[in-house]
Length: 251
Image (cartoon, rainbow, N blue to C red; front, side):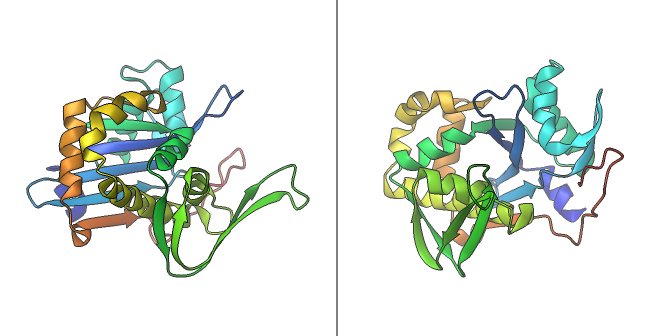
């Protein structure tokens, strides 16, 4: 409750990672975060929300939270899917959000490649995989050694999305790590001065209700942050309960 009260007075931005692939009518939002910007205390928090949370959706019923964005678009909610996600997060977790950014999965790939790759530090090797019908084993493996690792766009996508070994809880921690890596690489490449250029060049990769001035202000604020002033919060198995729905879905 103390954390939620603190979030009532900060600038909170909903970030949605949309996985909409060619030929798919529907999509899921498998990365859901709230970026908490505390201008007064010069700090930022990142709250990652598990995709499998089973939540009540106004005007619809109960479903996983990663379906809310799609449901909002199909129901033609005012403000679209992001508005419905914002309402569900506020109703369920008590966290208000004032703006949103929806990033397409291929947008992450193009962004990281445009930056020339990003570097992450792994304390131990990463062993991950994802289902792949054409593979003899039924899975595609993705393994990385410990240490400083430079990821290209496709590797960054796998780093942020694969979860069949470490689960969604492990994936959310990697997503937060990747955000900081992108921030560091952007500073090395003097991206701050190129924001108007990139805003236009990458406009087909995201949707947002933030304006260019808002983004420039956030970028300058982020550039001046010390690592100790960035705090990541992820859910753990201590605060959620496994549940099988009437339709046999694990949530």
